Image 1 (tube, rainbow, N blue to C red):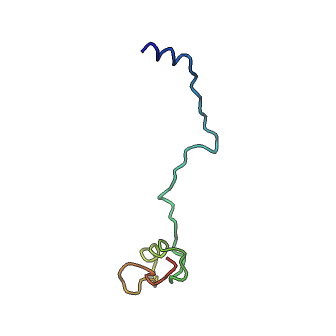
Image 2 (image 1 turned 120 degrees about the vertical axis):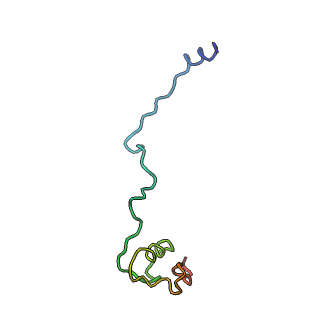
Image 3 (image 1 turned 60 degrees about the vertical axis):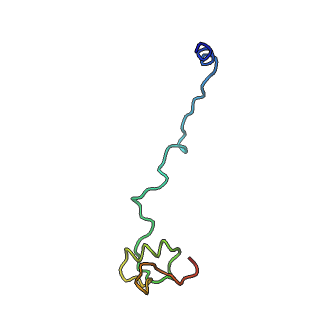
Length: 79
């Protein structure tokens, strides 16, 4: 125990300061939607499967789930 006290008194502890760039920021904010309904209806207009799923669930008149099984753009080889 005495050796530890001596060690602590002789070793300096580095001080870390956050700069403006390093301040904690949330990695992902769930309150900001990644996609929005903008009138697109077809698989050819989508850029990802996630986008197609969003449109199928949330946007009226989407025509991406032809068989009604809940999986959009099943035959689109891009995804």
